[in-house]
Length: 273
Image (cartoon, rainbow, N blue to C red; front, top):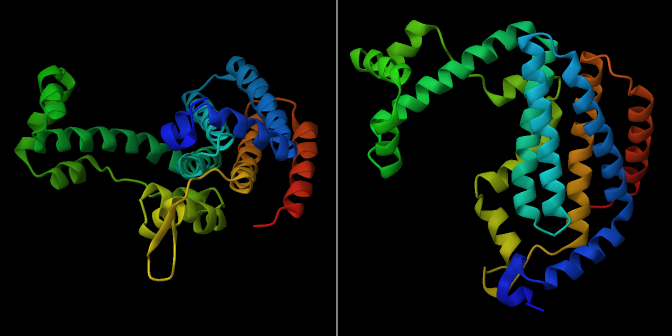
């Protein structure tokens, strides 16, 4: 059996740890599995109810959210916690966007414009870059891209965007519209430390140190309790999204969601950080 010391998370030793983790946190993983099955049912049932562009976008974001949650579980059950937090932040952001689009037609229109803005911004950055990837993109650009390049060349990028009446939407604005500002200020911000490689976050994850930052040993993320905490963080936003999407597509799931919410509240009340 290959050891964790030699092969890290690619080792065969991790298989035994994962099995122990699933047993120790059986209630949390069992709850997520029940939620996931309901998410999958809603996903396949909603396909027949898509009749507008907005519903198509909502459905697509929903699918991205539930597959992101599944990816979190795959990592968390193996003890890969920091990378799980990167995906959890993405999951929360997707939830903010989805709830905003469902609840506010104005922000939906701005969301469509934002896609155009992001396209223009990406092309502008390619124009300014000289690495090999940018060169390849320059070589393969299509007529649409060439026309945008010519327009941007005629004026500054800011002037170009202003003329088009485009502007970006910040994540905080989506969170406010989704009535999820508390989640933005707490869980989302906490998970952002993993995304932005915050010094404290990296030190605490990888080293056992004394107060003078003297490294005593390497520290890995294999921790049963942290794995359980990842389940705690993803279930609430998934249930919120599930509730909204099932309502949009008129899918009967209210009783099941209520039962799952009660089970989540019970387990959360027993959780200690």
